[in-house]
Length: 308
Image (cartoon, rainbow, N blue to C red):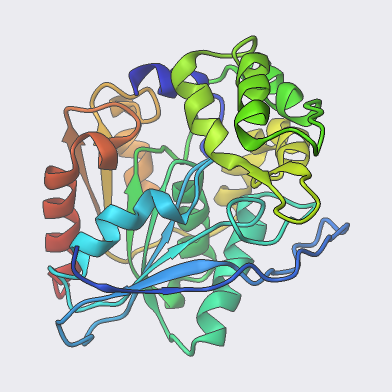
């Protein structure tokens, strides 16, 4: 897991009932003005009365709603909220779009809430998803009851764009015959990706490989071509964020002490953007919620149960 975080540094990017929402029609958008897309999600409900606004979660780059499955199932036993684990655009079972940035992902979330008549919600995001949630909270503060940011800074991120470009290039150029079995295709894809990065990262990316049961065609669940093209534009995140007012609602940052995604010296500057914020450091790397699940759950559930 620690080696996985090295490759992703360039981007910020059993109780409970689950309702599964099928994949919708994939659409393409060519305008830089973000048109919202309808997102795929899993919803989790527990035995507690849902007396508080729901929790909406966004995952990180190459991830999916499945990343939040275990945490979501545990949370609904501890809080009086419904939990939505969402596939962000260009990932998982959500539609592919030609636009990928925090502004677009915020519009997707606004539509998601509007369609379900949620006047506000608690929002939680990891890495790329955390940056999107921070943007959403500052763009639409009236929609965000409280905010949880998991191991990502709004100011800067470690960079290794060369390595990330190699990963995306390997994904985009992959050419697998429909006649191949899934295991054969996985073997070839894995060998190609290993030329761009190390084992753990490859294993994570391979969760995105799909094979159509009818045509036999292989594809990536994440929109590798668009993600590669938008890679350099993530540098504009802070300047776009600075155009928005601070978010004054309750905010907590949960960060890994061994992760490079949050730097302690940036905290005073971050508090100016989120003046009602606190920070928790766990002995972990970038995947805080995987490496320290119990500590993470305790912090999140206590924060969600607060009434401030």
